[in-house]
Amino acid sequence: MTAQVQVKKVMSTKLHAVPTSATTLTVAQIMAREDVECLLVQQGGAFVGIVTDHDVVKKAVARNADLMRLSAQEIMSYPLVSIEETASLEAAHELMGSEHVRHLLVTRDTKPVGMLSVRDLLDAMPQRTP
Image 1 (cartoon, rainbow, N blue to C red):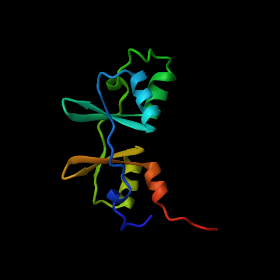
Image 2: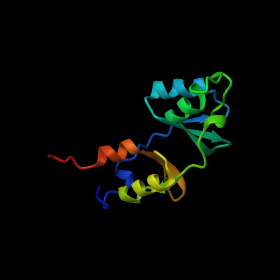
Image 3: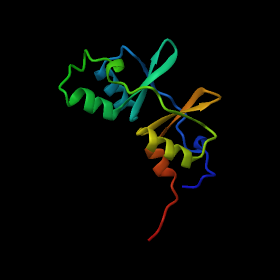
Image 4: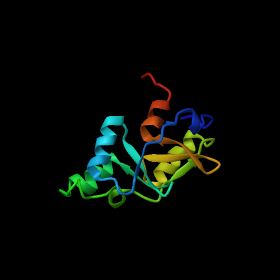
């Protein structure tokens, strides 16, 4: 990974969100329909957490929870870990590692502007030939 490449060059600019009251079933259906690995959880106009496909599986499905009753708030991960859009991909990689997360909220002057996933980092890596 090259330190010169900024997060904004590879981040996703579309933010998908659900309210804290959304059911886990709704969360899973939206993820499938939008073909995304995570949804931001919103309360009162602010993002308060994130629900990932990992959260759905580990905190709901594997525990045989009632997906119609368990809310996004109950399975979300928080607090959100964020990074400024001008940060390097190397800094994003280090932050993901130190915080043990696979998704970062990308901000511009503290305002949300995108998401960065581990997949985005992998896709941005230069192709290497043996």
